[in-house]
Image (cartoon, rainbow, N blue to C red; front, side):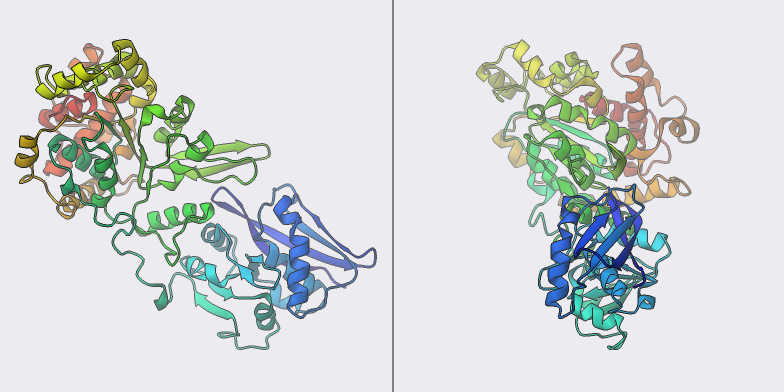
Length: 551
């Protein structure tokens, strides 16, 4: 019997690599041998494939079957090769014509009854198939809406192995075999529904609910407009978590290219919501403080999975009670904060995950969480630079005095607690805000100044459009993405605007990295104010935000 060949895709991170599947049937001891670096899940495919073929009313070849997966040096993981292996075996047995398999690529897991089960990572796999020159891909019916997002390829959504074999034999019409649906790539069927509807994961949340913290609301608007990172410091109950959870409500919808990137990452992670093949809203991830380094930045001993940093790509990563996270977990974020991607190296392969997110950190000022007086200064003494954050609340503030008298922590304990947020990490945070305890009078007076998320979102969208127009022709879309060399060469503020920064550097209050971040921040402040170039006013305000002294 001739050797039959089919094709599939092996995923390493979110990168797909074409795999040729060869099946050879010869005389010898009855059995199925898999070669080509299969993992445990792929070795178990032998029993799944045999049961699926038999239960699909097809004869299992009672001979020695050898299946090779090429390139042999590339590790193959997961169950998405089941369909390709099954069809290759039946092609070698001349049950289906080998000519009908030449230009097809198969993705899917087989159930024992012959059903095609949904698998992870279909979107990046189909993207890799298009790049490799394939024009038709076979996927499980449940994955077909996701695969149909990719233009330039025809998608066959099969419900079972039996229906797929009928289509391959040519016994059914090309556009309607029972259990096989053909969709053109780059389009979605009408029954999928609207994919760009309002956020469903944060129903009823609005920025106007945060009362008594006007400085924090303004800081959140600036961070949303420019993609800047944000630290929220204050005692419990003042609105830190509320602000972080409402910041996504003022972010614009994702552009098509960004939406496909985000969807691909969530597809690999298996976190796509049912019935929503395309994620068009910025994601929001809030892992618990007991999360491991692999859970935050990605990894795994077997299949490498994206972490929360990648799941928050083009969205927000919120670390509540940030000092309670393990220090090595927090410091592992320093590299993706700079490069915008996570690189996970394992023996024999390297996986890359996009991770360009807005980092939101929330922290109490001390272990007992009843002090608000020395938190910012403690951060400054820990080496982060923003020693002036303590100016956000005057020493004579009555709420500050009451909180200090109620605190049972020593100054050394407060410093140790906030020192868990390392200086290099905080140096990469653009905006630092101290939340003040709010009294009844402040709550009542501030209600008339709060704005709903829809109003703030319009200003954020306009600011992003101004930045996008200025950055047209480059690979950057947000002010926070501009590298420092380009800031100084092409996007310098107005003459004389950097005087506050020069004084801060002379006093040792800011690092060279911090200077670049303040300039980026000043551009965002200027975009929100519809100012052509940052002046000394915008730079001074941006410096105050970085130091934590803005009001």
